[in-house]
Image (cartoon, rainbow, N blue to C red; front, side, top):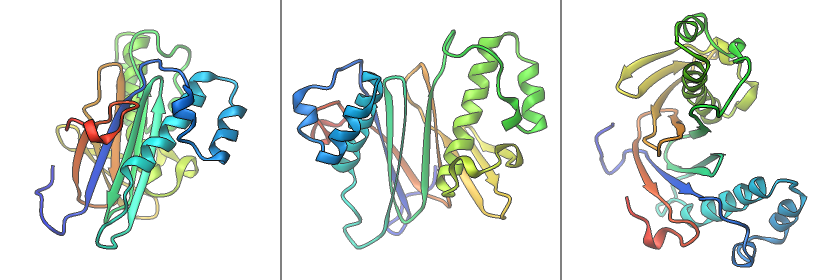
Length: 218
């Protein structure tokens, strides 16, 4: 964690537990006409809810820099978990995946991993342990790709990460840019990570869905 200071870049990460809620008329009323059209196009009610919640929460917490400082916004969701990151003074990326027994099955896409990570995964006891370890690694890489503005264009296997402290990592992109990555202390059943293009003070908060930040508990 970086020491706080008046000029230090800041990142607020808002964690939302959608809790299996449905899309109510009150929620739909908070969407723009274009967003409601997007919601209507989803075949999955869960996917529609995640989309709607991401837009509503992002609007509620992204107030823009009061001193004119540019803001960077990133969000990710998996299952009924949603993370929205709002940063001032630094580019940011966040990613989330549901983890746990039976959440994922089948072959792990190890082509996205470095040789070191492949060997570490191969040494784990069972498929559930391997999938959980892979997804924790994946959210760090995906957060880094989002922070760099590359998304899935980034060759994940070409980006090694080194630990720099408990839950903290450094990554160097093929173009030479360096990123900082931290694991986020989200609820059990999820893995989440945040990446920034430089030092930043990171605060994780809960956003009580659907009430809003007026009742948020840090």
